[in-house]
Image (cartoon, rainbow over all chains, first blue to last red; front, side, top):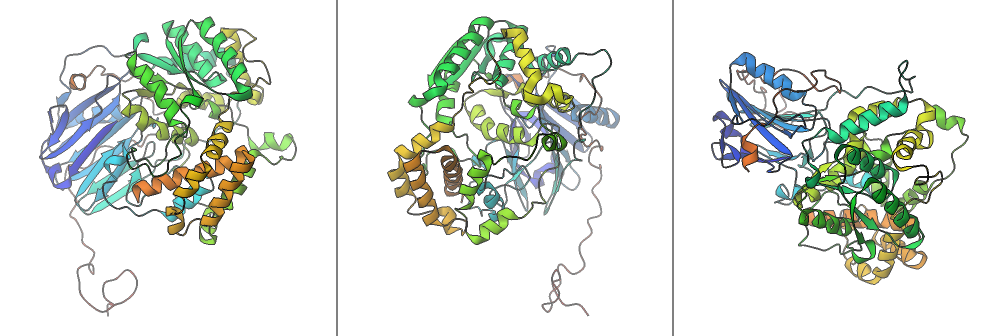
Length: 522
Length: 56
């Protein structure tokens, strides 16, 4: 949402707008220049704060300059008001005496906030490339968990010295000292009866439609990622109800999932009146080149970035600058432990298979690290942390493409409502199915429908490029760091090449993506 | 960049802290006294972990 490069000594200066940035001495805070983002500078004697936030749908155009000079009482009032902003934000606050500052993040995590603080300087950016300008050490504990596909949502990141300001967290900085503070854990949820006289579907509809409509927007600014699944389908319904016809974009897969995906997308787009564009997955296969010095650096990268980028370029070519997604939908209807117990002993899952393949790559040291329980994760969040990670992975690339990400199914109010639903509404994603039935008819998402899935794509691609991947893995950064056994990596590559099975391919892809990040950042 | 120079919306819709945002006030106006650890700048023998010299 912003970039900043602040010499801590400059915090003694008064902050002021200059050429689209907030200047304090030679230091700059630059809000991301986008219609979906607004910025406010509030100053009082010896103190100021900058608020960069998502622009609300309730916006009433105002010609006031975004600088407020106020007394101490008003400063406190505005400060509190900004902290409770109902959309996402990043705040930088400074006290000129002692050159102190605080960085704070909102609840939504819509665009990541990375920082690198040194003795007398802090740099902040949504783009990790800005911070990875010098040699960086790799955190072996984080890397080991990533290798066994245990995602980590925490201040600690892959590179030592680059931190992530997780949702609601704050970072206090003064010359020579930094102090990070996680927020209190979000309240635990449990299934709860609905309020007397209220109906689940009506409440769900109200919340999803409110989430879709919360931000300042117009139909001619919007593209929707429409895979053809229930999540993006429900966002499409809510958007169409609010705005009528909008543009949808989709990646068409090959194989047995293609026909049902194409048919389902056709039904959705025709019934909602969407202007649809597609790209072929086969035309934009995942880039498996792990050397790629020209690529933007990343701590984690979308697996199918090439195909997604093709969609995003289409959206920009049509003049759109907001991208709605279905991210967060997978997290809306969790099961509770006692519910799983009721359904009998769990069967081995594909996830177990994938993890088993991933563990085979590790050295004993890395395996030991990956087995250890972490004690540095961010506390429970109002937006489920797996959704936050998915958003953080994709948002920098979206922002680079000029698109502002909007993920209505990652709305914290919607998540809180769905997580508390009685079991009959959550089981089998019943409530979202009812919402889709209401808007699209009963024939689009029938029980047991064939879901679109990317699982076959990676196995095919790796298999096709096995020899060039093997060549690139003659030198292996993660092996040099003592985290993986290079012969085990080559053996897994051989397994994927010969079997084209999705579980080993997923484990190998995860390794390849981390290997590429480490080569770029190390 | 012009759009950054106007604020489109002033009043927030909901002043309830639904999601547990840390609501302490702004930073203190005055800096603290800046206490320095007594041993941190002292030369001396190698001592216990966390000290610069062995004390005594």
